[in-house]
Image (cartoon, rainbow, N blue to C red; front, side, top):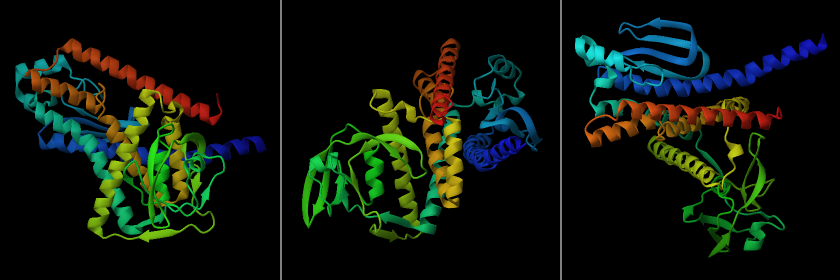
Length: 384
């Protein structure tokens, strides 16, 4: 009996503390993304048949006065907007339906696939743009409300036998820049160095008022992130004072907060591209790629850390989803934009066979990445 109660308690805690934060986080990001597509499509008088949060069987839904079916579906791992003329959720054109409505007229003017290429491009790009806008709004609000608490980049400890010791770092040094990038806090050092193990860096420091440039190559090390998750990444072997770190609390007005939010958004984009670039070139650790299970775990941990931590994670995930959707892979928004670019240059769409082959390749890539990321999540959990 006790075993059954423990199992029920474990399942309940997993649903409440992991499942609910994950579904809420993903639903917000997906809703904003699809709303971007929806609003611009409506602006250009495109008929929207379905607006769905989730995939699969409909759990709840209603029709609005424009004939759009709004629904929540059973599998909460994404969502889609289906336009008039789409074959399915991926917005691939239904060729037979398009030919039929073009011949008959009537609703042809509201079909997505017969709109001018520039309108279709704007409708597709509106999804990722909405994700970036969501992140900007969230980050602006957090920065304006809480300001920034920085641990000043003053070195208190140089680990014996570390890369930093070999490079000549000493306690009391203040890091000014790395590879020309201004450093304002120890967090800036960690975010830059962790993604660049094996890369030689030029690090400018202030030592008793004298500017000195040192060179160091971060060493790949197992790291524990702020939420207690293990990962691998570059480290120099320096740290701030453990008991009495030197903090600096900075507050901003509305306009300053907006500019800081833009900087942070670009920083997230840059870090994401750096990480993916290192994976492609074989320098990065592909086991760090996480799928739904990994994101669910992190979202649960973030929710327990507090509202601000959790909301910040929504912003980071929103930027990541917006960026990934812009990759030129068929099935993603970037793949559609690539097709439209070809169409704009050639003066006519790519052939049906070429587009169909592209969508199949894109689907295969997306499925492979999902399976690979899920395998990583399961491996980290100790199941395999």
